[in-house]
Length: 561
Ligand code: GLY
Image (cartoon, rainbow, N blue to C red):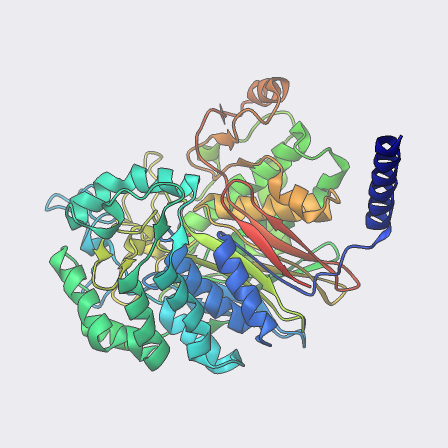
């Protein structure tokens, strides 16, 4: 009898617990960091707990990613920040890498003018002059509220105490081990066979970060850290000098701005192609009211693919570093121009990419980059995408510094001005020149609705960055999805050339694939490529936050309540 009473009592307690839990509204999220690693997101939130702003949290998160996400997190790479202050001021910082002073347009060509395989991706000659530390320091000068050293310290502690290798990370280390050894020798730090669950302590990186903590920007671009970097670049065939490091400067730029229905969208301007392409695609889609078709339906996919096709064709000809080339940004975003571009679109048949001018290079861009989104309790927001370009960049590891160097030089067109298979000329806008910035696709983006902050979003993924950001925006604002669903939903990608549409495998129905093929679309589904890893924050009218961290990676949102 007693047993029965106890069971009943326990049952009642459980029932009360469930009812109370169901009736208690979730705690409102006051601030959030969504990044590629939970450690980095948590470090950003800790900074906010100490009273730091989204800008302070950005610096700490970014440096933490250098430690625990070495394939893309970086101090020897570059990136872009798009921000919106709680006063509604929008802006962006370009801390993209630059070509070294000794670079020239033909540096990757042999005597016969052919591209020499791999030298723009692997080894010292692939390395662009890094911009990350200068960028973070510049942001601190303008917006920092906590002391610089206190923002660097969490990354120092993480490097000293170690981070735990994830399953995905283990596979990534294994996949690149041969390259690490080929470039750096058998004893190189990241070839020692770290397994999932292992703790990686990077003492050398802790020392580098200590220099940066003490001396700020000069801790990286001057002194022993700079000496080690130059020595390593030159020992592996590179051409970066102390003068390159000393003359590097980030640039404040106006973000690209465009309207999509009732949204105001602020995103990255050149030298990223991201903002202009996102604007072109969304403006081309807008008249079709894509929300009237089901998400990922044939009609919706056709409209989106055809807009992407036309925009990516423009990208190849017009876009490059605005400090070196004239970019007709207003014309490219002009509504009548874009409507005209879509006049050749029909639901009946796919347009063929060679029919879309202008045409030139086939665009190969690395998928490894990293994005994080932050909103602080004061309402400041930052969208930041940074990169080493390839996974672990050039694979050149500065052993005494504990970090990888980028291979961003590969984002230039190595052989511009040469007719492609369709006889069309292009790519000059993105030709290599000393101190020029290479074209990017990174698309950190901030959305306003009714004059209020509505969304912070971005992703890695090379050429798929723009189309992944686009689909996440449409999922939320056309299809009313919550942010996590919007980030998780299957994605597809098209980029003009090659003339194929790629789909995440096994997530789209065979009948949809068949119908698209019937209309002349070349489909590639069984393709291992991940299409973006989106990290986003949605802000509702009452300023409550919700977060979406992409399950395609180890991405994690950490909240401040
Ligand atoms: N390296 C990738 C990008 O900048 O888009």
